[in-house]
Length: 146
Image (cartoon, rainbow, N blue to C red):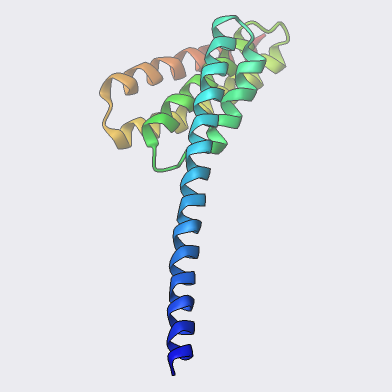
């Protein structure tokens, strides 16, 4: 009977340790994702500031994949920055068809950002994104007319 008690206690201890270990692994993974996401956003911001919108776009897209969907504020800001990069590439383009396509893509992503800011009730950001959408729509319209 004593051996059975020891086996049961060891079994319970093993379950407890494996659960705690699993939780620690999850926490470490989440922290690594947060650091990776922050690094990507920082890298993208530097690339955009330097005019390298293509690299910034790639980094923002990678960061968006890592952002926890419940972090709507970060997701909205990152999507807005991604759309700005896409619009900047469109605005600087020479080919009207490519310009129109990129402007339409930026409007779609701006709209996603706008919906998130509306959910958050961030009036300042809502106005900012609405202006971005207006500018992108003007560019798309002028490109379509060319």
